[in-house]
Amino acid sequence: MEWEIVIGLETHTQLSTASKIFSSSSTQFGSLPNSQANAVDMALPGTLPVLNRGAVERAICLGLAVGATIANRSVFARKNYFYPDLPKNYQISQFELPIVVGGSLSFFVDEQERTIRLTRAHLEEDAGKSLHENFVGPHGESSTGIDLNRAGTPLLEIVSEPEMRSAAEAVAYARTLHSLVVWLGICDGNMQEGSFRVDANVSVRPKGQVEFGTRCEIKNLNSFRFMERAINYEVQRQIELIEDGGTVRQETRLYDAERDETRTMRSKEDSNDYRYFPDPDLPPLMVTDEWIEQVRQTMPELPAQKRTRFERDMALTGYDAAQLTMHRHVADYFEAVCAALPTGQAKLAANWILGELSAALNRETLDISQSPVNAPQLGALIVRIADGTISNKIARDVFAAMWTGEHSGSADAIIEARGLKQISDTGAISAMIDQVLAAHPEIVEEYRAGKQKAFNSLVGQIMKAGRGKANPQQVTALLKAKLEA
Image: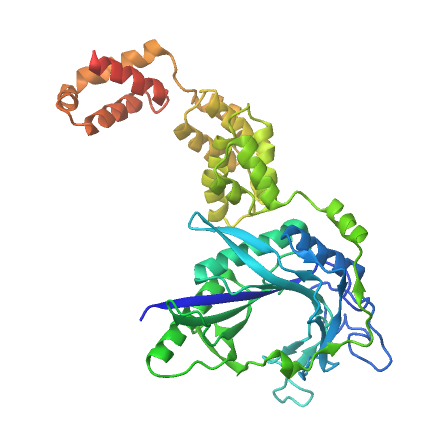
């Protein structure tokens, strides 16, 4: 039987406010346990929550970026459940009336564009953290500790429609959403610190069936690599279970990276199990059109807008423009390189940034903001390619020298010191060609007998004679003319 995979993602994005969503406690990561939990976070009697305006504005910003509707009236509710790291025994969230409704996110998978609709995005508070490992109680017994530093940290939960059909597609969506929230400045995106966590709802159904299968939720995936592996494992588990005559149970599962498998955490609750009701301590959140417009005016140019501009004004392909706008630092770097170039060289700049520069950064696990070759330096190198001073091949050697800081990363200084200027003198190239043709008459005869590979062989010999510095376009044109004469 052929199976179809159905995936929907719930993404918990920690908002970049200095204080928590309903209290004045700091959200700084890495502080001593329970040093950032005040009376409100600990739910001491008589304390009341006060909504953080900055968290609301970050939610509005995300809604505007994805083309969603910003609700003028939204409501906070109590999501009731008991867990040791949740002192109130309920989580303040939004249920029936969220602040952001609808919207969509576009991204590329294998150079094919996909658009996934969003269901909603709602504000809520995070819970604390239970520490189960290597924690010893007052009498030396194995114990569980509770750290309430995260309790009350502002989250924006972004929920997609179940429209993804592979783990690769889900990862591409999550990467694009991650890039967007960092681009907007509403989240630092640090997955190791838990700032961006994904829950994947996964089910399978026979190809052609309209009804969804029973879904399982994989919780707290904080790595794109683990996310893909977890989804693929869960898909295979469900298919094998059904084909063996079993039934998939609705449940919450965890991914064990060491064993590369998902395992049961608990049975999956439905919304009515949480007994949602409006929080009596918080009035409805009223967002005026004027407030929405104020937020809009503070937003940077969005990735989609920048991508359209790159395609329209710089003649880039949709794929190249999408890759360059995945990260704000990359887009800014590209524009800074183009500022140093003559008109019409944007495509060459894109090729270098997505090719040679990207490969070098990946080898050393560096962000583009840490690149040893800055944008003006790369621009100066590309100028020398464009004006014919050096070939693209020699430029790679110059780039390698720039990367190590030779001559302070100056392309011109490296070209001059190493004597790498391209030979474009027609007479000199013609002489090289004559020398090679005289030395290899057998290859010439092969070419004239119809063997096209012989032509490339001759070009290689000429480039070797010129120590790689002969202008390749001139070599090709002059060689072809001589052979056809």
